[in-house]
Length: 402
Image 1: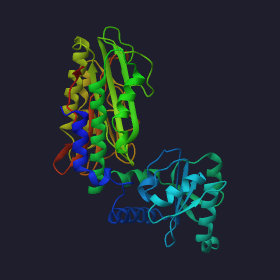
Image 2 (image 1 turned 120 degrees about the horizontal axis):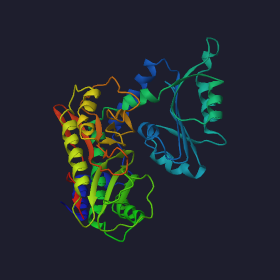
Image 3 (image 1 turned 135 degrees about the vertical axis):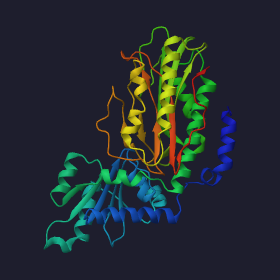
Image 4 (image 1 turned 45 degrees about the horizontal axis):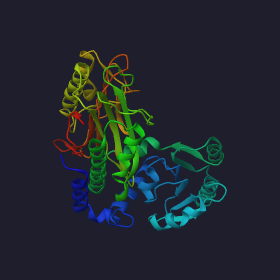
């Protein structure tokens, strides 16, 4: 297995143009491709305007459309035939937003970025005053009062699902950014494997993970971990917030890690055992997880229906286990369809969806005991190809004793 230093050197040789830039950016051709997708999406839904409203570093549409990753708040207004505008909070965020946003006029949001968007759309669609209210699509989440402000002026259409559909097939440039994010995530999990030892608590494990990639320009997206004693486990899935629990010999450590690189993220899930081999229960849990991973991956190819991926996981229930985490989900530009569970832990729905080349998926059987007290993680990010799949994460499969 390569070391953290060796992985850094490999990424620098493959992605030096991105890692060496002050601020990496996509090509003009890629940004024009996105503009075309948005224009077609608006035309297909009869939109007179589109608002993208995201805040508190949440959401992917603003960055995908403009190149500006959201900080406090950004409200982007798109009206066909007029210059694109983005209203940003706070005022001290304007200089960098103006530098990074592509083909977008960046303005201060003043007291309300949504109010400024309403004014902009009202002026741009004033000719509709005779025939009726403009139809405005919305991507993102709006506070209730801001939603009311929009609804009082325009007919609104929720475009979040349409946006998610637009992000499912990755362009070649997007795949390359995903490969870089996956490489940074491999660095994160390698740092955990190299540094985990008795005496460290879960928060210190997270510090190992993040410190390994921050100098590259990668940022944290997910650093979930869980630790428990194998002989008396009390948790089966990585925690979203690390605890102060200290590692001891005979512990299990599982993780779900994602490093973000300017809106593109890798993901790797692995299980480690501290100081000794897994006991009989954990050997069985991991054997079932490995077999399920193989069974699901064997069906990852164009034309496979989402329900076939769920069917491939039946060995979990046959072995007397279940899952807590999702079995499969789309990735790269958000948490995308299909989001799938298993027979014993179903998802909200199994979408009528077939896999296509260019989709990115995380396959991650989190096999756990029925009482939810013991579990393992395995799996990672893959890309659907013309004839199957390609694993984007390079960290070796299987459990590891550290």
